[in-house]
Every structure is written in structure tokens, then in C-alpha cells.
Image 1 (cartoon, rainbow, N blue to C red):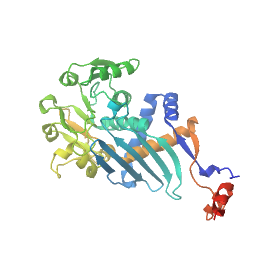
Image 2 (tube, rainbow, N blue to C red):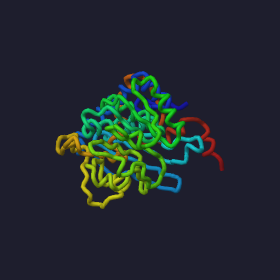
Image 3 (cartoon, helix red, strand yellow):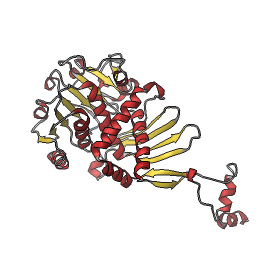
Image 4 (cartoon, rainbow, N blue to C red):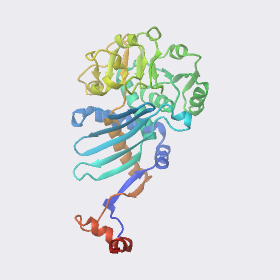
Length: 358
């Protein structure tokens, strides 16, 4: 008989069901607030992290990406896809899973679903940026695109940036109905707008989050006035944008990691040397954020590996706190680390009988 794996060989695994238990036990808004704090804390130690643009494999239908980073103590990566046509097949546009590991041994300490976790961390990152860039009196948000991200974005902005009213727009009325229904008990005032122009009227924070993998103009130049904060999260791969170039030219632009954003973000429409400010520098106090009430600020967010690292680190603690995880036997654990084959032979007679065949 094979011996039972030791505790060191059992890796905590957070399934989709476990993730839902954790979030519901703690409360969605509390989770978003805690994750925003974790992401902001890691931005403050930005220089501690390895940084590289994500490794992407593009296809006509979408993209599959790996997003790795390390702070020298732990290593984390996320596998994530983006396939805009999936909902027509009854599948998610974005799915993901991730791993957190010890650097000193290479052993994983957490394996988790990251479809829900990515939605939470994306919204939390948006809220972190809004803390530093949005008008201080912002109370109204326009949510342009009512897909899987929308509710998380609205709740994060309510919890961390003081938003009280959300004005929705989507070309699909059922998508707006979905968001309004899901947020009916949130305390937010929800308005279904009749157009994108109507949705942004009076809003101080404009969030765009559409899925089509193409260069689109969701907001034209004349739609965006002075003094607003743009939270552009839909552009996340080459050839996919949402904003008219004129908006970019008159905005102060803030990004996560320029070498990645210049390939995938809204600023792929601009010259390679167009000035941008890294968000971590604002958070660390090295650079100013919003300078005046009339300034238009743009957070050109494509998502970066450090944010996933922050989310996984937060999740490891939350899973331990709540007990919502499953120990997964995924690491070989022979009595003698050099005797992996011997462990296999001792596991049962099937291997021995196969070896004995002429």
C-alpha cells in the first residue's frame, strides 16, 4: 500500500465552490475592500517584484495568457483566457486559475480557481486607481458594458470610492436588466440609460468594459468632458480598444506596466514615446495623481501579474481563516527524495507485474 501523503505534500485547493463560500462568508464588499488594500500595499513595494509582460498566445477566437511574477519570497502565476465568442456557446469569456508557491523550495502553497478571483481583483484595482485619480466628490459612475465584470466594478467603486449612483449602458438590454437585478439590494441607485451618451451624463467616473476583440470607439471624443476619471478596462490585447484617440491626447494617462500596456491597452493607439505615469508611483507618493478639478484622468488598465499575486496572497490567508479549501494530493512525497521510482513500485503490484513480462 502507498503511504499517505505528508502534510507538506498536500496543497490547499480553492475550487469555484470554495471561492463562493469564502466571498459569501466575508461579504462581497468587504472582500473588495480587503483586496484593494492588498493590491495597493503591493503597489507601494513595486520594485520588489519581478516584472514582465504576460506571455500571450493569440488565435482568431481569442487569447490564452500566462501572467507570472515573484517578490523573492513567493512566486505566483495565472493562466487566463479571453474569448469574446464564448458566451454564444454558453461559456465564459474569461476563465482562469492560478498558483502561489514558495521561492525557497519551489513547492506550491495554493492552487485556486481565478475566474471569480480575477473579477474581484480587477474591480479592486479599478477602485485603487479611483482613490488616487477620481474627483474627490465623485458620486455618480457610468458603467459602459454590462457583462460579467459590471457588478464587481460597481460595488468596488461604491465601497472604495464613494459612488452612490450607477448609470448603465449596454447594447443588450438584457445585460442591463441583469446588472440592475443583481444590484437591487446593494444600496446603489441604478439607472438603465438609453444610450452611452445618456449613461455618462453627470457621471464623474466612466468605466468602459466591453468584450469585442476589435478596435472600437465606445466613447467618442466629444462625449467626454473635462474633470472626469476614465476607467478603461476593456482594451486588453493588441487591436482591441474602446476610446477615441482624441480622448487619450487630452487626458493624463496612468498605467500599470508600460511595456505591457503599450501593446495591449488604449495607448497602443499612441506614439511609443507618448508620456504616461505608472500608477505605483502615484500610490508611493513619487508622482502626483489628479492635479486639478478640470483635469481628465485615464486609468488604462490591462491587468498585471502583481495584482494577481496580491489576490492570491489575500486568498491564501482567507482560505486558512475560513477553512474553505480542499487539501490536494498533487506533490510526490517519497520517503527518500531520491527514490521516486521506488515509491512507484511500492504503491502496488501492478507495476511489478508489468516489469516481469517478457
